[in-house]
Each structure stands twice: as structure tokens, then as C-alpha cells.
Length: 323
Image (cartoon, rainbow, N blue to C red; front, side, top):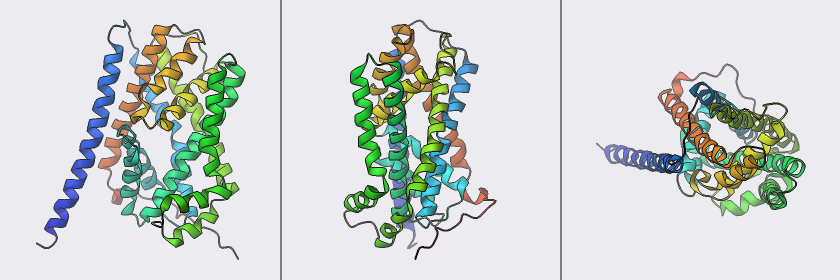
């Protein structure tokens, strides 16, 4: 009986989190459906399914990088459990403020013995690195492919500085201390020295490959809507510029799911690439729906896979000792 109030509190909190996620997802879907009204369009669903798979694959390197950061912070979560928490946590971005992303990921790893503070610090390191790589690619590609859009180039450079500087080893530890306001345990702060240039370089290389998959995911949406004038290889820089600047700008805006912000940049760059304005608007909206459905479906599958059923073949190595 003593544990009853605590259990009830746990259920209430879980119910509130679920309600927030459902509200955010519903809001995004309704907005997307409203945006599609008034446009005549047909979809080939095999291409949209491919887009969803490429989208999920595109985030896999970032999930791996988060796992790597946790290891460097002295944690030893199984890789599969880390990826489970990572993908389910994506649903938190549809709730205003996006703080629910941190809550979901840290909470789902708590049962694996991962410190909440370490998981939270790892989320910020992974997310900012993901956005820094994206904004760097956006600045590079847009400067070469869309030089007439000088304002977008300047936005991309600004986003690269905003998201990239905090991830650099000389700055990250100091910023973590300031952001933690004394709430992060000193032991966790001391482990931040293990997030060195080698760790960061591995994240940049792997996450860059993930952005390529996200660019192909956008291409698959376009193919699914009958837009065939863009090629997945020869037009990869165009696709990469479109997806990187739209996703990063949507993230920095703090608007749930980057609503409207993503569409603004996609519409601007797709129309500059020979896609009609109507096709670009429909593609941007359908891409949002496809990516949302992919996240919801995968999260539902992973949530039913309780941690005891997820086995790790190898044991994660502890961070190296330093004299």
C-alpha cells in the first residue's frame, strides 16, 4: 500500500507525457492536411514508404553518436536500448519547447543505469552536433548551388556558428556548467573532458552520411509525387541543401516540429531547382507527414520492445583513463 501513491504518480506522469505527444502529433497532422487542401495531387506510396525508411536510416548515425557520447561520459548503456530511447525521443519535438525530447530519452535509459544528468548532457551534445553538421553542409551547398539566395547563405552560416561553437571541446564543458546551474553532478562534469576532438570528428563524419540519407528521403517524396527532374546523385547537392537548411532552421526556431519554417525554406529552394511552386508546397507538406508517420510507427514498435528483450552482443568499453 505504501507504494500505491508512487505508482499512481508514475502512471499520471506517463499519461500526461503521452497526452502531450498525441496533442503535438495531432496538431502537426491537422496543419499538414489543411495545407494540402486546394491542391490536386496523387502519390505513389511505394516511394513514400522508401522515403520513410531513408528518413529513419538518416538519423541512425546521430543515435550511434549519442551512444558514443554516453560511453565517453562513463555510462554503459546497450546500443539497442540507446537507439530505442533515441528514436522514441524524437516524438518530443512535436511538443512546444522540445524539452520533452530530453525527458523521454533520459527517462527511457534510466532503467539501464544511465545517469539522467549524463543522458541529458549527451542529448545536447548529439543534437547540437547534428544541427552543426547540417548547417555546415547547408552553408557550403547553398553558397555553391543557390548563390542568388544570399540571405539563405547568411542564415546557414549563422546557424553553423550558433550550433557548432557550443559543441567544440574547449567550449562544451564550460557551457554545460553554465547551463546546468549547479544541478549537474561534478563527476559528470569531470567526464566532459573525454568529449575530445576525436569523438567530435567521428560524430561529424557519421552524421554527414546521415544527412545524405535525409536528402534522399526528400528525393523519394518528390518521386512519389511525380517530380522526376531531380536525380539522387547528380542533384544530391541540391537535395542536401534543401533538407539541411529546412531542418536546422526548423529546429532553431523552437517551433514544434519546425512547423511552417521547414516549408518556407523547402519552398524557396525547390522552386529554384525547377520544381513548380504547387509541387514544392505539396512535397514539403507530404514530407512532413511521411516523416511523422515513420517516427510514430517505429516508436510504437520500439516501445513494445521492453528493455529486457533487447540484448547487446558486445559490452561497451569504459572511457579511457588519463593520467
